[in-house]
Image 1 (tube, rainbow, N blue to C red):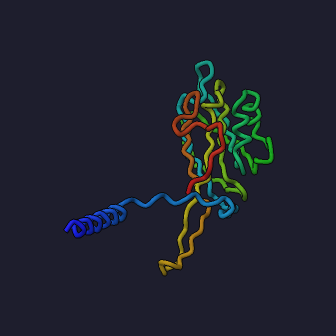
Image 2: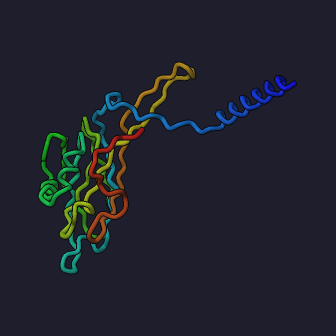
Image 3: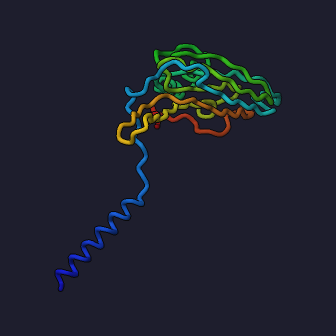
Length: 198
């Protein structure tokens, strides 16, 4: 009788374990290896949604236009290094090719109260977008955004066990709120290199 009860208890525990396993949420998909993502050229793949405060870039009580430098980067370490010092930040504001990580750079200008949506081509090899703002009284921590190009997962095919899965860069949409003396909202740049997520 005791063996019979032990057997039924074991079976019951097994069924409970199976049911709880079925109801557990699926783990998030792993980040694809960088080599599996084709970092190819794509037109209009970077969208900047810029809105400027009426008191943009105040200097001596008066608003003024603001210069933005948009970098398309293969890696972010060079930007992170320069954001760590005033001299490096000045180099970023020059909007030039400060090292081999820079694929392209361009200057933009925003006026007080202006709202604009800009579409930019994403060049081949670009994995990061950096936006640097040239405020009169700006600091690196409040005048820069560094954003990873997102990666999307694409599943093709109709047969469940024979579907083809691949990863490719997705459109990068960057909202930029230009406050009187700093970039508003969003995450400030980190001091370490990050990774793209799937």
